[in-house]
Amino acid sequence: MNVKGKKVVIVGLALSGVAAANRLQQMGARVLVTDSKGRKELAAAIGQLAPGIQVETGGHSAETIADAALIVVSPGVPLAIRPLREARQRGAHVIAEVELGYQLCPGRYLAVTGTNGKSTTTALIGEMLRHAGQDAAVCGNIGMPLTALVTDDPAERTFVLEMSSFQLEGIEHFRAHVAVLLNISPDHLDRYTGIEAYARAKARIFMNQTRDDFAVVNRDDPWCTVLTKNLRARDVPISLLRKVDGGVYLAGDRIVSTLRGRADELVAVPEMGIQGVHNIENAMAAAAAALVSGSGLDAVRAALREFRGLPHRMESVGEVKGVRFINDSKGTNIGAVIRSLQSLDRPIHLIAGGRSKGTGYHPLRELVVERVKTLVLIGDAAPEMAEDLRGTTEIRRADTLEEAVQTAYAQAGRGEFVLLSPGCASFDMFENFEERGRCFADAVRRLQADEA
Image 1 (cartoon, rainbow, N blue to C red):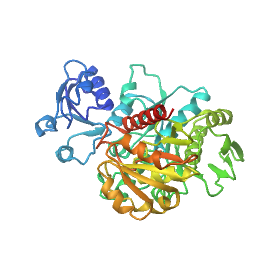
Image 2: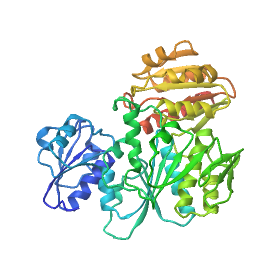
Image 3: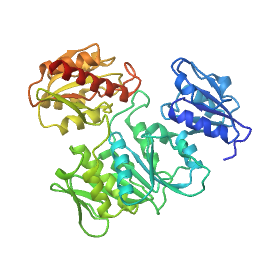
Image 4: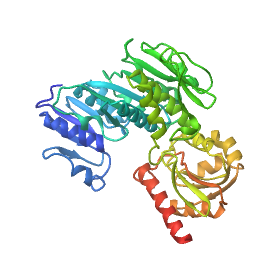
């Protein structure tokens, strides 16, 4: 990629934007970064930029984007926003940050997408490859941006990437040797015209694969099946419900691989370091991806037993007088909440709410009736959630997350759960889901101190 002396615009000044801007300037480009947030909010990120990079805050002006030889879009920025749409209509070259990283980083790529479970599956694949002695960089939406890993060393490396629908919209040549599609459920409908458009964006993970590549697909998910009817890559199915050939499936409480032409038992579910039905699917997908990438059975088995999961994903953060507190702040859509509720076997006091993604909350009704004793709502979406879930269980409101923790705890009995699984984005009250999860854990620690 020759950008020396050319104008390059980076849209979005988060981790990916900073990494892309600094790298492109090193390559001799004239770099300008634009972000819709104010300069005060972006002070920390601006401080990480190399000297000489221009910064526009408070919006994306036409003048900034005009005449750019290349426009690189950060993961959180939809390609459908007006300045980018108009730039593309003018013939501007617009790509995602991950496409930039791909063009600059020679290597073998394993990529994971889906509505839920991406981060856990990506991290677990990385652990399996490391157990097999492979030097794999886990990056993308989890950990470091791909562009931050660019070096001047021409040697090929292995990258395990978590990829969002927004990133996949902006790829051109990106090709995954192994592409994983976990599931599709309504999400980001505030940014897409419907679930069909969202699903098509996810399916772009397969678009540049060849018959030398592998597509790991959840065959229990109807959308995944519809989206992968015409794969060029080798189909590697996973299933909780039935035996599959050339893939990974659940037999009783055992995860089994048939990738070597025989039934190889990988692990008994109770032995896994992560629990819950959703994590069985994640484990099967990770095992399939790792095995077709050269990991041995023993490496996969070791990782399945040892991996304990990630922060903010069904993370136990404490217990107070027999009440257990579970942090699932990463549960930002309805599908994630459903999976979280299904994974707990005792009464639940659910804290939910935040910024709506436009999906509605009616799909939660049955599980809320069945499993939730108290529903405590926070954030902008609280009125909509209260209306959609009216009559299912006792519903309470809280102005802050700390108040919600106290309210849920007051209703909970010994042996029950207080679960934070918002079903919404965090941006109405928090910087991101990580901050929300930390706030939840801090509130639990204060409760523990008060009750000691």
